[in-house]
Length: 150
Image (tube, rainbow, N blue to C red; front, side, top):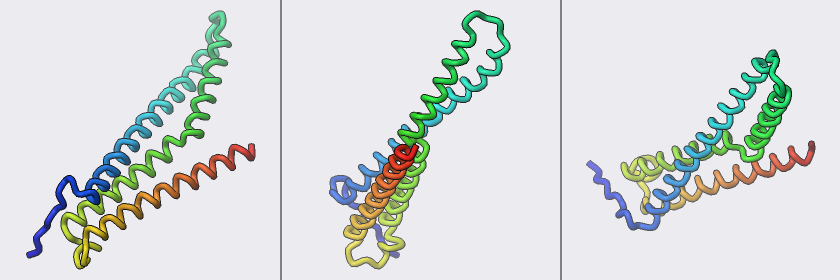
């Protein structure tokens, strides 16, 4: 039976994995919360417009116009900051890092027969982080091109 020898908490390779896993998890949660909050406000504002349209109140047209402007601004923020894309990309990277952590601790997968599992962990962790960074840069470039084309 194989024994597992988890790295001590102060090992720089394992610490890097833990730090990045925590960072991507936290950023994913923050992007999800922000995205959902903005969408709920947009939905509520959009639902109020037809209701307010039939009201005889003085100034109701300004309120309706303000809601329309608010919806446009919020949608612009969603597009500009890409909260939904960041949420899913960060969650995907966090889950991939978690997967690597468990494989490493179990000495399974790529770590099962590795001469130096610690080196494999470092390489695979950095590859996942680099891949996510490349996707982020590509998304920013695509967003800039889309904005410039308009």
